[in-house]
Image 1 (cartoon, rainbow, N blue to C red):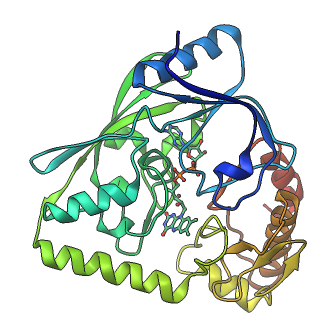
Image 2: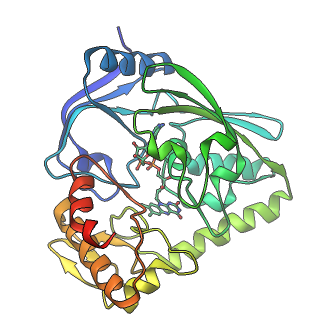
Length: 304
Ligand SMILES: Cc1cc2nc3c(=O)[nH]c(=O)nc-3n(C[C@H](O)[C@H](O)[C@H](O)COP(=O)(O)OP(=O)(O)OC[C@H]3O[C@@H](n4cnc5c(N)ncnc54)[C@H](O)[C@@H]3O)c2cc1C
């Protein structure tokens, strides 16, 4: 018996911030950590394909949907426990709540994540952050279930954190359960001010009024991807319901009824134009799910 809820043929567009994606065969919302682990082991025993979703704020999901089981980390792993300057946080907790609780305790280290709309799990995998800092710098260890269903603890150096990158991204069968972060005591009012400034900056510079998945491409070293895309004449470019944002050229927004093919097509076109202009190739910051990854690879292989 597994506690929680199950949905069959569940539209991914209802679970992604881009509001795009066809149905997944089965979506499971386990109630407790044990339930989550049991579902992973059940899938492994029966060779059923499975994958994970946090809050869906960094993914492009295919129009035809996904096969197999998609596991949500909330509610099972939605917890935050402070112990002095350390915090053990479940991967189903929201980054916003973590940032707010750390600020309220006068603890520095995660305020750079203010305004990131994802789960802690997504942040740990993507090494989410801003110019003010990224989560990987605060990680002490993570606990996960590996591809054989074993529980493992990896220390920070084993996670190979780098700009928007981690070893966790290269291990799609690993389910991250929880992490310990080390924070630093600071001045509560200064931390709150930095959080407020970060949120105001976002409101001024990002198209938050439309569905998106945040920045689409990683910044090449020494460059801003948004600037390169703008200089290549892509700002405002449209395909179906998808558009390269007029406000921030590294964001693709869903202006209504956009499909995954629309977004992928825009990504391929933007990359083609800026590569021709600047010669700088860069990989996506968003995760392309299911067959989209292979379509992107094929479309860009000749100029990788
Ligand atoms: C408006 C907006 C602003 C944004 N601003 C920023 C920003 O400033 N900086 C930034 O870095 N990002 C930003 N993002 C992108 C996104 O919010 C972050 O990458 C976030 O950390 C993703 O978390 P998530 O829970 O939504 O992950 P999801 O999109 O659900 O998942 C992302 C990937 O992580 C995997 N995953 C999730 N949880 C687990 C787990 N527990 N175990 C194993 N794998 C897991 C998924 O399988 C998927 O491959 C923004 C997005 C939006 C929409």
